[in-house]
Image (tube, rainbow, N blue to C red; front, side, top):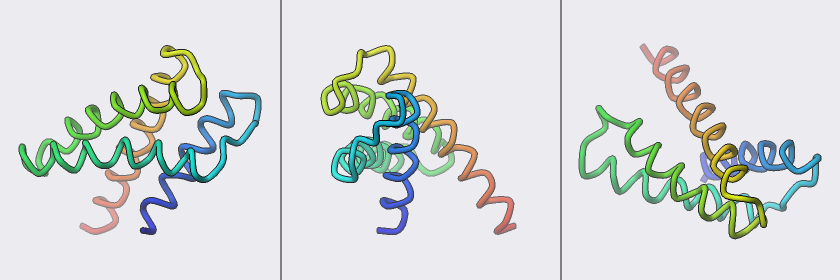
Length: 101
């Protein structure tokens, strides 16, 4: 649950920054995060956690479609927002792994 809230906050900030600081709302951000996390979890369960970035890329691709539909953004802007989220998420995963080792 905590990860969902953090992810929604990150997505909200990214989308708000791209839309002249017009925050899309927690519901919209939450739906965008779920659309990124659920496919990523399914792909990671199939191929294993060693290739977690493949699941994140699939999740970002699905999230781009959902962002476009929920926020009324063009596909290019939606996929840019999803790519920024993907980069932030990968950086956070690596930081957590470094802190745990």
